[in-house]
Length: 134
Image (cartoon, rainbow, N blue to C red; front, top):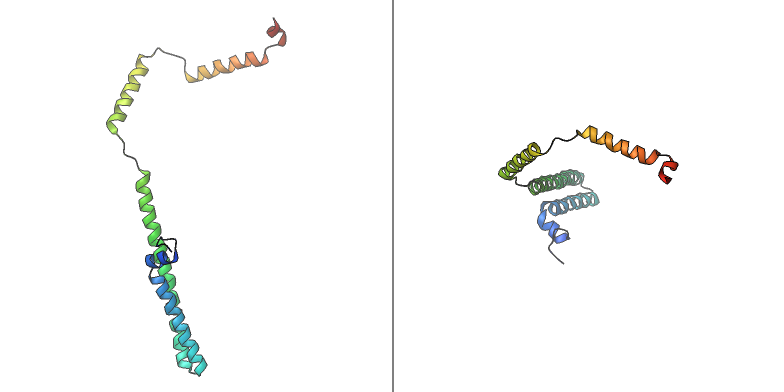
């Protein structure tokens, strides 16, 4: 059996308070059951109250470990998402793009290009068949 966090032993090593709480809850319940068997009401009441407390502490331990794990995972995943930015290279690329834009010949606006493309498609799609055969 491996000690990976997915195995039972790995989980016990990762979250030792949960099995401890489980056994404390079972122990309190057995103590109450023993008192009930003997007819000792005060021992039964004390055991049941202890069981409720132990059960609550076990649930609190589970929630605490879950919260701890989620915050730890979110911190590590955020660090992996960030990339370093080379600001000097980015600025040089922007300056080069501006120079290339200034040196380029004036051309049509994007809207004019779109209109010209649509007119070209309209002529080819809706052209009469007789014109295509000629």
